[in-house]
Length: 290
Image 1 (cartoon, rainbow, N blue to C red):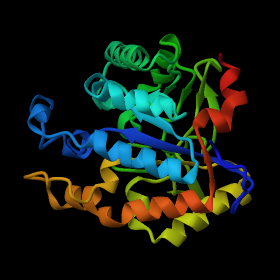
Image 2: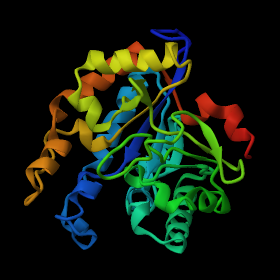
Image 3: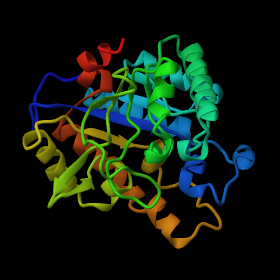
Image 4: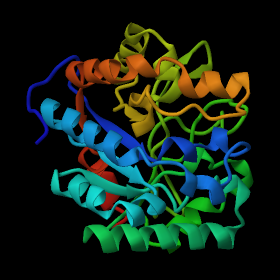
């Protein structure tokens, strides 16, 4: 399904989607309790189907980091993801940040998510991404727990300084953890004047002009000689989503900025670079653990 025509780079980069609904994002935790999720009309299925159609048009395969909570409620969506040739991976059960969990609670969370994803899809799930990149120096046991639960790769570290997450001193690119049993794939950054700047998607991609992101990914490919890992969410292509009452100005800015431009920017990215799943890009490294 992946195109064989090379574009701006000889590199095959990894496209990823974090499958969660708009009311489940970490920024809204102070305003929406998990008990109230049932009061919101779900939009994740329709938005993810739009993404699947977009990927099909561009002949791109992707890794979908999917909440167990979503898989339990929308099993047919998960089946469509797999049927269309994409990589299914875990985003945990219900988007609890790892920084809020004990080691035991984290193990329970990722075990439950993995079981439901595998039961619904009929495929083995070996990848994981922490909600809000919440692997930090305070939970350095997290990769060990992933290994214990049968995961082979993770994309859970942001090697940046951020008010909510990040390990600024972490390696920028693929490295092995948990006695070499888990391959960690940090979200992509570009390094300028001894500082890492995010260029792997999310709110930064919506904020920056497209050509800045294009330049940064090209720089990772051509200067660092590394593949880029890009991510976005289904709610980011949905400017019509309901506005959450009570959210402060900073939270509203982070969540809603440039939603109306996101889909077209992603389409440009799909056209300008070569994309595949995380296993497409890192198959040999992942199989070392398998």
